[in-house]
Amino acid sequence: MTRENRKYGGFLLIELITSLTVLGILLSCLAISLSGFRRFNHLQLVKQRCTAAAQAELDSIAFTGREISDEDFERLWPKLSVSIQYSEASDQWEGLKLVRVKVKGKSFNKDVEVQLSRYILSETRL
Image (cartoon, rainbow, N blue to C red; front, side, top):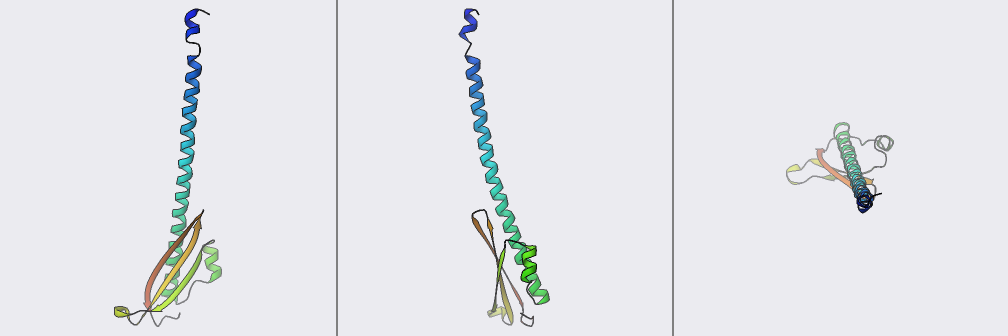
């Protein structure tokens, strides 16, 4: 080896180590951000399922006068729970019943709760 070749002999190795380190940092940042997107998307999915379940429960009460049976609810929306409250309406809504449906679910370590309400005719069997 000549003197010029020995002078730059370690430069390629240092450049390779530096570029691999930067690439490793970028890949780890990408993995962390993908994990965050995954959690966010799962949270949005659970919110959407809670909203769909609450809307279906309100529609069932409004059109059939009955709640969705517990077996059907569990079959359609597993891992969700529902609670329904009935109350008499007042003021301009007098003569109607206020139905509030609250559906709860869990997305990883976050609790998701959606509450929808609707006024329905009092003649409907509750």
